[in-house]
Length: 437
Image (cartoon, one colour):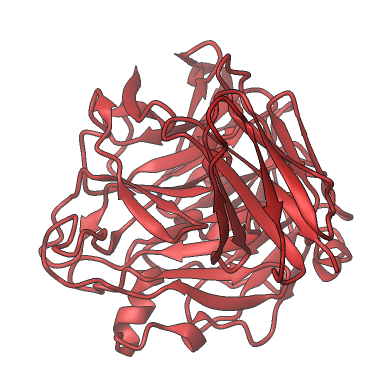
């Protein structure tokens, strides 16, 4: 485990999976005995659990916990709002949060939790906040669109109805969103058939970024963090937005709109940070976009599923930077697969953010530690929570008046990796602590 925190950038190189790193370039790997059906919520029948993926539903990758998150269902297909996670280090599934769902045709549900829904591409992971994000979709029961903005605290395992300010989120609450989180601006970009929006978690606000229409069909959002571009890919469309310049630049990418690569309603896509290319998967052999030459190349389909689920893959195809590999979750009765685009390990996970005057961060000294440890907040003060990787709270500390430091007496705490979170209701920061005995 190696952790560095400086100038608003957090690097973590923990939990690399050597099996995935050692895969040859342009190859597919099947992780045996990794069917999600083994951890279906006991309240589900077979169709309801299956529909968590098959019913126009996606997922996202959590680089903090190094796990793939699958969440979906909805309409008449499934009320299951359980959160399913695939751990990359152990190559195993876990039902992280049990279902509390029902077909009540409302969101939030009477118990305050989110309704299951067809998520389309409305799920993202807010790395700097350690939260899953979800907007819109076709809710369990009557299938109506929901306009609620949700986040899930992955450490505390609690949902929050954000009730954001500003211009409302996508005008079409139901279907066919494309979206992705940008770790540099810390914004979620979300495109519906009418406009491109951004959601700012730190200020809890939606903003219209661009009046830009797209076809009424499924797409996938991708952020190129090097060129600072947001792409909407799929259904024969390639729409491109300049994040820094705040303008559409699709006309500069006309040559890259290859219908063989971007056509079809349910393309999945991700940005390979090591190769600096976008990889698209629609079933069989993936397509790779060279972002400098603006040309596509088709790769190997040997060992890949011949097709995606009939209603789409969306966010269940994701790039894992540490292991330099793409993960594919393609049905609860299929083993999880990985696509290795280029050989070798990837770079350290980089959680970058635009420096803020009142940014909040937390550090631990010494780290690793074996006894007492000093936890210091930089920036405005706040409280400190220490959690195990299972999400269980180990300690909660509040600095005294005028102070920004606490001492954690580790006592009988078990050795291992702990997540240290600092927050004051508006700003948040986190680091990891290794406790050894």
